[in-house]
Image (cartoon, rainbow, N blue to C red; front, top):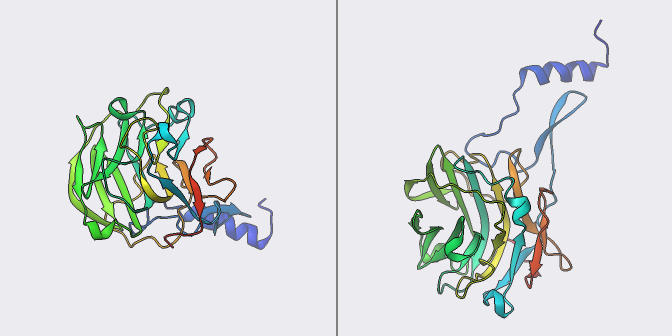
Length: 263
């Protein structure tokens, strides 16, 4: 005999016949919350706090008082995707375009397992021996907010700028692994000329294909998805760098908090 309230019985029926989508209309599927179950009903609920600001990076070399954020390799190494699918994305406002500033780097400089820099108005992936680059307009990323996403799907990597693909998708089977390498955001944590100047927020790494084609520009803070391994939103004045996925302990080196956001 089936028992329960009318709401619970209806919820069980809806749960059985309604899939919980991971990708919908080529947009961030959980941009306004994630699906959960209560009394059998699926409903949207926010699982991560709204972004309350951004991290400001000073562009100074790491060994001279530069600012960056790090996550320990002992944790990062457990979720790196090897040669599988992933999406890494962030919002940035780059105020100085000089040298070869890293948005992030897993490991230091030439020994890095994987990283991204933006230089001469191009998005570069590292290491350079297996890396790619995509040209982006200066007006689209210099002193303005930009959302950049790199998506690797089935061995092909696509770069998106504010929801639109740029350049040509590139074949990429880079092995991204290594439990001894820290993840650095805003620098590579060591080298001269590799520090980012400006603001970064909503840095998210997800081991799945979040975007399958062009999508509407994102206008609200990113959320934790089922395969999200790191989500760094703007924290607070006292604690700017927080991982909302609760999978990594972030260490802040000299970044400061700003109330400015891209939303």
